[in-house]
Image (cartoon, rainbow, N blue to C red; front, side, top):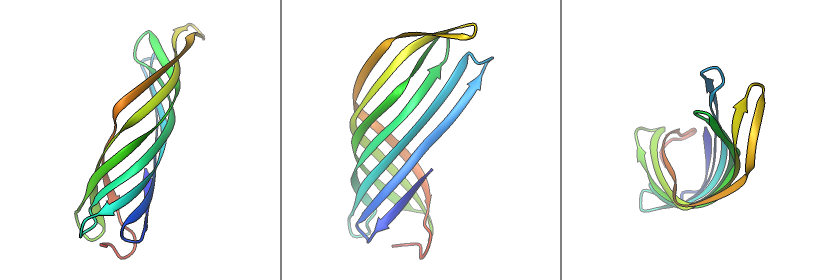
Length: 145
């Protein structure tokens, strides 16, 4: 879910987040994730549909799809760009792609009956495409800009 606040025709501040908590197969499989990402955008062009911006993201995860799980936190930043397609007076489809870096601090673990066996702490850094989004948005108020 997210919220974008337009500051005039050319600039906006976007805040979006993700939260999921899936568990299945007698607790041996899990997919837990939370993420918060504020973004500053600059809209370009005559109709102000193209956008460039910067985004910061932070969050946490706990993934286990077999015998070994991975649990930790991450943060990073991206240079983003995209386009908004108008689908009606109040509806828009936003396509965004971001390039930047994300650093994660985590540990691996194995589950024994009633106990989590933890490995040493690890750190990874990823540089590349770290955001790809297709978002359906609703404009409140007067609609088209």
